[in-house]
Image (cartoon, rainbow, N blue to C red; front, side, top):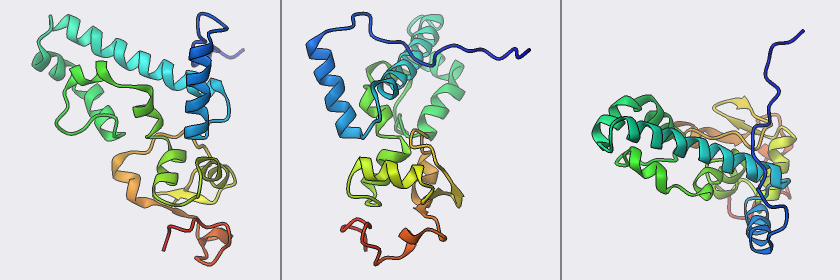
Length: 175
């Protein structure tokens, strides 16, 4: 018998129908090429956990940002590594983050922004079909958070037909 936890990695909204929220979610889904609302809710839950941790650290330090930053140095370092926080940001900046800050760090979005695809949906397809590598390793999950240090190592797999610059599906903007 397995002892692993089988809990959801996200929370659904409290009210099933709120026109404004649904419209906002649909806009984010199309802008970031997400497959379904579950992916958005997962990102929102991740952001919620980050904020909760930042509040906990700030609370334990009684609002002293420096002390909280030292106590949560690994937490802040991780957020800087994945590019959610800048080098000059401190732990209190976590409280003002938006879900788009997390969605911008997904491999799908980073690959699109770097011109590997003509749309976020196309970037997703290239990734899922195994055409994209990060630091030489094939990655087939569009939701992977890309480290700032790995951003320059995103490329088409050398065995992929898309590695050819003349391939018709290559984005126009890439030289």
